[in-house]
Length: 247
Ligand code: PEP
Image: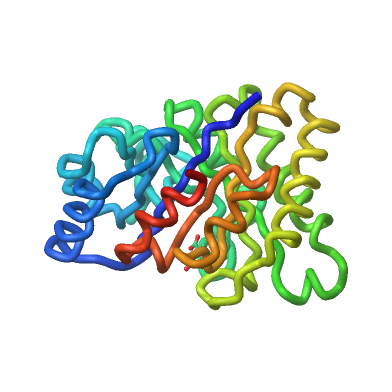
């Protein structure tokens, strides 16, 4: 089974109408590998601008969404609203949501359930902190986070797992290809044991954490690395190099 390589660009809390116009123009003019699925994720207020302007072979993702469809939840955005404006994907469980906004495993599981029910595709993020890695708890943490997500998933077709070691996010400290492969293989093993061999084989596992134009090709060679979730470098022209890293 060949899993289609997937690259996501998480713009986080960055951008303006004008900077995103320039960024999208760069992507639209870029020579992108047609065998790679590409998804960009601007802040909510720019989703519509980016979706309308970006080439049609590049999809757009929200960076979060809530567990409810509507109601008295000031400041929240519903999965249904993302769908309503033509957004296909959402990133859930990003470590910044877990750490800064105190989202729990359980809440992330509920968000995944709701987003899938609303018809979105989900990039579900998992990853350990430095102290957890140093305490040899990497797989304990990642499996715990995965279990909270898997509990709410009956069909894995629209789920991609993003393994993002927290110590590698925005730090310039990328995981080595061996470190990434080791955890990706463990995640696939977990899916095989807890879900099914078919799901394990078909589900894409992206790596995220300081991926750039210089290290992407080496990481992309690893057997269980099926793509990247890119933060900082997705705002730069080198994002095109990352998208083409598998070619
Ligand atoms: C991210 O935010 O998902 C991420 C991986 O960030 P960076 O590439 O900047 O480490």
